[in-house]
Length: 242
Image (cartoon, rainbow, N blue to C red; front, side):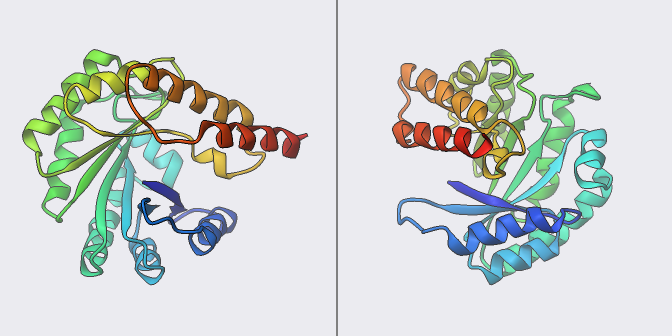
C-alpha cells in the first residue's frame, strides 16, 4: 500500500497541492494499492473523483494532539469522519480508520486502550474495512503492542489491521515482531515528511527507514523494497537540501 498524501480540512494549499500532484502524476503499478488520508467529506469527494480505491480516515486518540494537528476537537473529528465514511462507502472505496498517538502522546502521556477500542467500535458501525494504528512517538513496548494487537485480532477478525511505527526509540523492529506474532501482516514507518523536501532532514528519515528494513529482514520478514534505490533517493535529498 502506498499512501499518496493527505487531503485534510485545515491544511494549507501547499499541502493539498502536493497530494493533488502525487495523485495525478504517480505512475500506477499493478501490484501496488494506493490510498490517501482524509478527514472530511471534501476529502472523500476528492478520493472518488480521482478514482482512489482506498482512503484512510484520520484522527488522534489524544484530544490535545487532535486539536494541534487538525484544529478541531475529537468530537468534531468524529462527526466529520462519520459523514466522510458515508460518502466513501457510497463510492465503493475501501475505508480504513487511522488513529494516531495510539500508545502515547507527548502532551498527555500514555493513552487508554479502552478509548482506542471504543473509537473502532463506533466506526465499525459505519462499515469500516480496516484500522491503522500509529505509534507516532515510538512509545509502545513490545508487550503493549502484543496486547493491543491480540485484542484487535480477537474482537475484530473482519478488519485489516495495519501498524505505522516510529523508530524514535529504536523499538520499531521489535514491535513489528510482537505484532506479527499476533497475526498482523501490514506495517509501515511513520514518515510522511519524506514527500516534503526541506521540511525535515530527509536523508536522516530515509536512513532510519533503511535501518528498520534491515532489522525486520534480519528477523525473517520480506519487504520487497528496493533499498538501493531508496539509498539513491537519500543521496538526492542531501544534494537538494545542500
